[in-house]
Amino acid sequence: MAARTGEEFLAGLRDAREIWFEGERVRDVVAHPMLGRCARTLAELYDLQWDPALRDQLTYTSPSSGEPVSLAFLETRSPDDLVRRRVMFKLWADQSGGMLGRTPDYLNAILAGCAMARDHFARNGPEYAERIVAYYEWARERDICATHTFLDPQSNRARSQTEQPDPTVPLHIVAESAEGLVVSGARVLATLAPYSDELFVFPSTSRLQLSDAQRYAFAFAVPVATPGLKFICRESLDLAGSPADHPLSSRYEEMDAVAVFHEVVVPWERVFLKDDIALLNALFRQTHAFIHGIHQFIAKNLAKAELVLGVASLVAEAIGRTEVPAYQQLLGEIVDAVETLRAYLRAAEADAIVDATGYCVPNPTIMTTARNYFPKVYPRLVEILQLIGSSGLMATPTEADLQRPELAADVEKYYQSATLMGHERVRLFRLAADLACSGFAGRQVLYERFFAGDPFLLAAARFTSYDRSTAVARVRALLAREPNVDSRALDASGAAGAGHAAHPTGRLLRHPAADA
Ligand SMILES: Cc1cc2nc3c(=O)[nH]c(=O)nc-3n(C[C@H](O)[C@H](O)[C@H](O)COP(=O)(O)OP(=O)(O)OC[C@H]3O[C@@H](n4cnc5c(N)ncnc54)[C@H](O)[C@@H]3O)c2cc1C
Image (cartoon, rainbow, N blue to C red):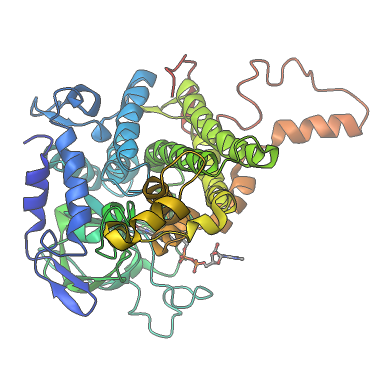
């Protein structure tokens, strides 16, 4: 087995999966008028892996089969590996300008991270480590596309799982058999579910499981097409219209769904952690598994910020405002976001760490900072596009209007701009509106606020888990008027400041990473 083609990916979606969409069970996701377009967009990404010009940038040779497999699965052993993998992340992200948030490389990088963190699973028992590694290798050779659900439904967040009015709502174990675990209940929120082969049910990256809940304590994976497992989609943000009218939502509407389990059997070889609540809570806190996922989505975020910069620049040019200092300032804010993201990537690769088992990880502290940065800045980038585009974002007739001979002269005359013909300006502003004003745009903002975890809890954890001792000691010394801290010893390199390499299981490397 090897990296898949688009056709192979699409063929894999034609199975017995239970996808519910607008009151109907979808029989064929690929043929569906609303859902099919994103399936084909994903297929195009898979096809790139077999493009002779790109193959070496997107794949590497499998250590088990000798076949080309996606670089997202790479177990990283050097900073060069990190750079190589990031080039792959960025190449895929650039295809959609980062609008397809959940390309398969995201969870595949996290799965590789779990395999690299096999020692953590071994603490639950040696069989758990063997299972996660075997599953990772299986997934790598099949080039899977996965979705995940890390959270219980939003019933009553003030209560633990057992304290819910109905404690059978959160996904829970109902029985154990020779075959495996039997689970019922629900989990949220499975982005990309209709297009996925596999579902990962893992603990949250941002919240702790309360300690009274062993029957809620597990990490496993099941095929999307598993008997008893259904996915209930939200309504589509792809309006099924012309791609010229909705350039983003017609291609990159990746869908979100709630996963509902009715006595689903999870074979034992797919159960990766169980019972040990402390180990589950520690999975993404004390291993680097999720840091590899952050590496993917910061590359995606860079592509996304670059898309906003490109669109905002053209919109400002179109209406003749690029010489106005206030507009330049707004556009400069987007430039700062682009360059901040590029710097995070480069710094995390340059200051990579090597963990206890010899794997190389982008600097966890820098990656965590980058993770917390984007949910704050992306809404601002969209706001800037709204401020620059203003009413023009709503002066946007459709492709059907542009085709009408009776309207042609009016469109060319009244929609013309400083740099564009009328019909060209309409196309640009429709793209800008899809990015800043549509339902798709609103979901993108919500996605960036939340998909990587609860921003409130993550911000608080930033304070509580950061090693502030050097900074505090320096201030104490200042207050005591006894300079008992040698400032030359602090932060001598200028790169590793207080708490910089803060992760218990890593050693800091120094590496001149290639340009991000
Ligand atoms: C578009 C989208 C796609 C997603 N895709 C996935 C996916 O594929 N897989 C997956 O597992 N999850 C996914 N998520 C879920 C995501 O992980 C959660 O949204 C996130 O962890 C926050 O949890 P919650 O939505 O349950 O919010 P809640 O926990 O219900 O919190 C609601 C609000 O309260 C705030 N809050 C929490 N605690 C406090 C406090 N003590 N004081 C003040 N405010 C507080 C939160 O920050 C938030 O703003 C997705 C979310 C979105 C929006």
